[in-house]
Image: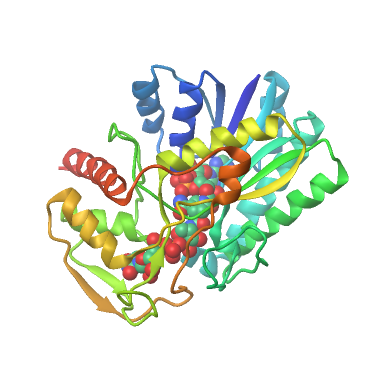
Length: 336
Ligand code: NAD
Ligand code: WQD
């Protein structure tokens, strides 16, 4: 029985594939490489000594999914495939709704046909919207502030309706907080092609000298140092959460949301300092205006994942920055 991993060549997907292979799971990856590179497969093989089956294609291609499900016995799906850039989703909402919503609907249609009713879905803390009543709990009301977030909210609703219609389904909605870091080998990590939107890849590129200076988006928030506070979680801990969730849905039916975060908040300047320590470089920064849509503070109450999944995050902010730096400096050396 195989696990189908949509978006398995991407940042979080590739780390999860490594853990699945290390756990002797049979893995099939489907990814259209819209935001990842084929070389990731070689790195997965170097780390695990196993080359999983990779099918390059789009999850909106129903015929392709039919072919995959008819040729393989697939027990469950970990569904990472999606577009994730908040700013781009505001400029190109149709692209986001088409890719994320239509893609998920076609996937669900084919899963239903082949009676594969187990899914781990990549949701996001973005579904808590503008709420700043930290720590966020799974029971909080959901809202969204941009099309990307709306796709996550809608897909959660779609999956709840799917479960209501057929109680044989078993679904875990994993709400990630801010994933950072990289595999300890330095071989896989987050490697955006364009100028990064997210803090960590931006800081890493300042450290390697590819970008000159970090813009800190506001230092007048009601937080300890005035800069935004987030719950950064090591991608390796996050990947482990998927294996725990897979085990959980295997033994039950139902639909449950889980926060995957550390429960700790760190400010932008905490991250700058931790990255300086890890890289032994000075991170040049200047404070600019707040970024539209940002909330001051966001961190998880991750008790539910601890209780039901027996999962918790172990890696601290220094390990996150050290691993991110190893990956970023490797990449940067290879570009020279
Ligand atoms: P990523 O872009 O690195 O990985 C997503 C992968 O999906 C990429 O390899 C991309 O090529 C593939 N993909 C996209 N659309 C596809 C399609 N239609 N068909 C086939 N493949 C497709 O992103 P990531 O950071 O690894 O995120 C994985 C998932 O987790 C996404 O759904 C994202 O929205 C969600 N998420 C990410 C974060 C984060 O900060 N990284 C936080 C919360 C939730
Ligand atoms: C973190 C902090 C910024 C960049 C986003 C999505 C969310 C989720 C994770 C997918 C904030 C500050 C950032 C910079 C800065 N993704 N910052 N200068 O906004 O918490 O979450 O990624 O689901 O949905 O919204 O992450 O890394 O962009 O920002 O000062 O150049 O760093 O203001 O306080 P965010 P981020």
